[in-house]
Length: 304
Image (cartoon, rainbow, N blue to C red; front, side, top):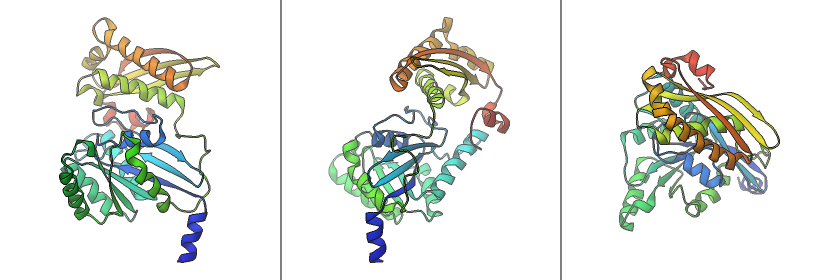
């Protein structure tokens, strides 16, 4: 055993780390903060993350490949929700390490559902008690840590604030101990497995979520119809698909005002992220009940 431990200490490590939790608990924020780069869009609304996205953190002696997963839903009525649950469940079963996020202030039925899935996995799990900056006084935080620790035999329980990197040092230092011996799986310069067209699609969807009221974002998706890149410019033609004709007018807005705001915000964001001038054209079209159609989901790039 001593020889194995020494070998693991001296050798390079690489592995997959699944970040799981209920919707809107801070999974994407955590990965973005660790990487110091926006690989996943973030909003305050649930279902922002719909795809399995890799965030790749490379250091001299290890490479941690974070798997950003959709939030696990209790009620998965539509095909898209079932797909997202399947994606998240597969990730936590197949990873080398699971990071389970929950909020320090509350434990919900959705948190318990995630824990029940984790208990079926043999993968080591670290519990991250998020948003500890909102818990006062300190004695309450200690009570929360004890309460969480009693729920499951977690390998570690760590209080964090996902948006503050200084609170993640203990976590980052612990990660290599759970990774297998392996050479780098990705180039050291690579921070995500997703390309610029995907970034464009997600950025547009993020701006739509921020502009629209609660129910509409769940019925829309963005498809990049054309993505042309030159040395200085990128031309993007994108279709915003909605499920019903009534949603189309809401997304466009009066005299096209909402769509113009979305386009402007997306262009500014993409220019900063892709370091090129962005020419963006947006159209809104209807695809009836696309979120409940396996055929439509596949054609729109969702993993089933």
